[in-house]
Length: 540
Image 1 (cartoon, rainbow, N blue to C red):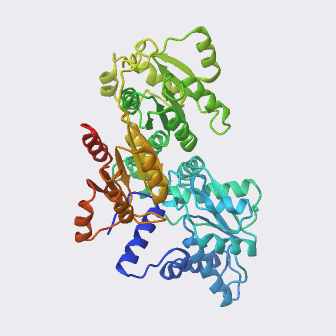
Image 2: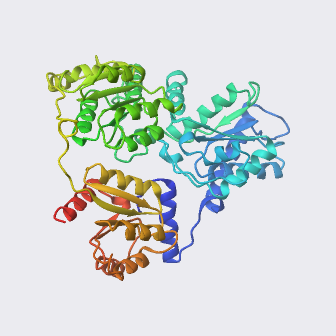
């Protein structure tokens, strides 16, 4: 068993590469025989049970008017569709249901292609918190599902993660159904289609909710965040129902916190880390740190957080320009922004901030409790339930991180910033490594997504270090390594390999003779990678 700490697409790529190298049969996607044959039995169960609820006579089973399912790669509804087709061919049902294919907005290649009446779905990079729906490249599944939808009047739509989580909580509170995040995407889509009158109030609808709530514990894509969603201890006796109900209520209150996202943007990692720890000491918010304003803008556009905490004095783009960029983008313009800065402000500065910022906090002039209370209130939360020990631990502390190194009166000391080139055909992986390394403030990182562009970048920038994936679209990592070692200008550049590729013992031994270290994507220790790069380049 190989554990892949990534998306379905990445896991499929590893499996396909493994099968090719071992000369094994690879049963994939829409062509998967066991998958489709297994999923078709869902249609059998639906038709049989609907006939019991709504008898039609003559011994026939009954198909619903609509079958609604959240979709990742598409094999599920393809299998169910096959089951209904077989039932109709056997004369057990008299019609085919209409398909409603629901995707998360953060990974919706099918819904997007359907909206634009495209015959093929273009691959996307997943940005959804619901990892089980993070298949960015649906392949042939979209074409098959599109045909099914066109033949019977079906549709494909996308809903936001927020809509899905709200549907999950609403179903638990109002109906007593415990749904996992992917199933709640289907319910959110059903509600949208009902509201838009695509589905009629008189129609029979089956929503696939075959998942369970175990994945709710880690419904965020980032594998380093695992949410502890406790539903209360097991009890016995007559009070079971009341205690379980109370436990569910408390759990969903915590879940409201755990799906609340805050982005902290500060070029000083110590300051951003301090703010993150302050917030997470009081509330279970998901806090993302970023130490570059441009990366911060990119992250806010991707994540669409509930709140942003940011500094004003940063390189590349100052906080005022970043605020204006937020407000100029309709999708993120309404996200509240809290400014925490040591910058001495003029009257004109304060006037600019009043237009765009929720509030302004001068570093060194307030108690941390005040800032946390303000953030919690802005997010609509309640700080009264904060454990006393946490309140006592932070009471009296003052945010006084020095910003003298970036104020106009005290220019920063010269720091040698080293160049690093990351070559990886997965933009998401390359971007992750770039952010990890650039967050140290020591490196300038350039991404390349194929061997040729990586080679050209290396020749142009002459980097201090290369991070290389071994699986590339236009060449192999081994071939690129040979090219590097045969060139006088590049042979001495240290190379760190970061790959999902599996090596035999002799292959690994040969590879280690040409590189300085090998990291496996499936078991990547991010801190260890950054520390290794720091140590390698510390004496350069």
